[in-house]
Image: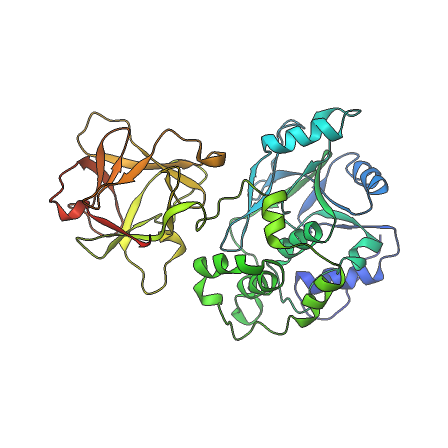
Length: 394
């Protein structure tokens, strides 16, 4: 193995990877973060699949290595998640969908379904394999992206929209150290993740870029965006599909907060300058819906909620339920949403501008609350101002 240091100073992940790719001579490029541990026979399944499908970009199952003690933890080979994204421009994980399992049954009849390549809407970006020719044909990386961040979603969307596939290979496993902090700073303390993400979105997301701006209004007309003309020319040259095609064919399960909804935006109490808020809680598990001073004039991502046409009150990842309790006042508990709003708890606006939970008959109430409190539901009283709510867009 040759160790190549192409420059004397740090140039960031994206340009460092490009420097390595230019020097590589093998038919397949494999990109790995430095803090990884490869398992036995991790490479062979990746090479086999690229030989079968040269336009497939492949990721292994990524196991967790604890940062504090390097403990390696793993699940069964058929227990893994695939990549998604959030509308504020971050990668996230989600379960393999029923739709994907059905596709595998149709297209992998001669293989064990549990080890069949699994389509993934996005990739985390730190670990993947790709044909060297295809890497350059498809546009490698955006060289004007700086530091780190956004390049994984840019490549994910580009591969899918331009005729390739992004797949998880269950028989390939690599451990990765997950840290809850960045061991380095961004160049010149710039928000390189945000700047790179808006470069990606302007080129690949079409009208859906407005959903990024809805969550990150600070990125609209960002002065450090730079020129994306060459990436738009690449998209035209490759005859790539629209982002709407991607949403309908690759990631139809993704919730769009402004479509098929009755109302969206901040949900404000008419009694005080208080809005529903996530309070930055962990959406991976149930959490109590909070209330916080309303952010204006732009809505904050933490205060972006929708009431869907199926009468589900939700944000991007969590749906509103009512706490099971004998108390007259109950908390609103947010739980991970199921595909297609398949949830028993539904809500409706009454003629008095109350938001009533249909199953319990109780109304959302902000009485006796201050900022950073948990909101609750209580017996409906049409004349109480703390039970009157208004969506930003309805």
